[in-house]
Image 1 (tube, rainbow, N blue to C red):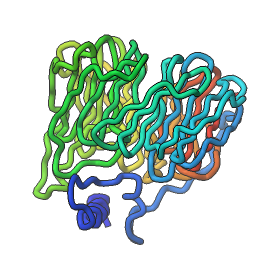
Image 2 (cartoon, one colour):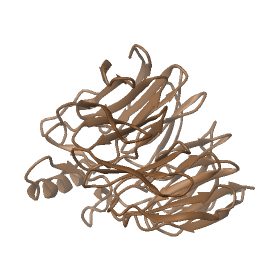
Image 3 (cartoon, one colour):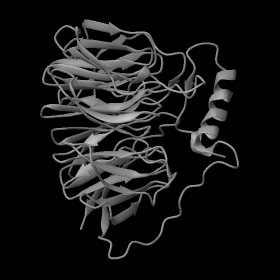
Image 4 (spheres, one colour):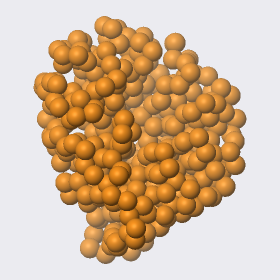
Length: 387
């Protein structure tokens, strides 16, 4: 069975049980049917560097959602499906507080060090005091929230699953503005967040669209088409921009499922380059490269200036990889068995590997002082360091 047939079968099953706003859940597509693609077997790494677990804290299960932690100052904030929110010392792993948000949460955490914001599949947006965990305010948006809120520049930016973007004042939760657009008949059910950069809010949508909004008032500054929907069926025409746009200096880069990875000039939206590649997790960037873990399990690096392919590591095929995290001279990526793989930034060669708790690493790894942090589906927070 080809990948497209596997996804088609899953989508058909989902559509049969949905009365409105159907979505394709990428977290289960690789396990669809006994004849689906099998994950690559891992082989020993010659001369691997030792990777050690610096500390480990249990937060709580993510269930079918994706929970990503946040770093603000010297603290890490994380959440779980049952409403648990924790503040952890980034250096030692000591839990400073643990509270309940009194809601079933559905997305990761946003924080600026003053306020911590989480959200639910009922549309609740809940802000807590960063130092104490005491509730500050609570508002509701129009539908479930699957992507972590962004907290910066005195704003809380929330993307809801019905293609709306809300801006609230971080201090009191007062709504500043809302942007709305029509959603496609079938969408990819994956965290598609927003990025706040230099006064712009960047967000990707169904139909392969990338938009830039003014953070001050939500006005549309520009819109571009990252990938054009193609194919004879509704499923084949699903071309959603996934993940969070990656912005750095004068560039914003995005990637689309069944589409392309592309980079644009952030003020005008002028395209700098684009390459055909399909991903479910988005794109990450550093000073020289753009990185994608594609939907077949290959990790690819592209030159940020030209889009030229630099390297491709295909020995993790169908292992349901997370977003790639650039970290100095290496990049790392998690997989469906809780393994975290370290690759050389310049060549893609394996340099190390470490096991966590055996459950999938769905959320993007997070850079912290001295290493990286991953949150697993079973709720383990693992701080990792290379020796």
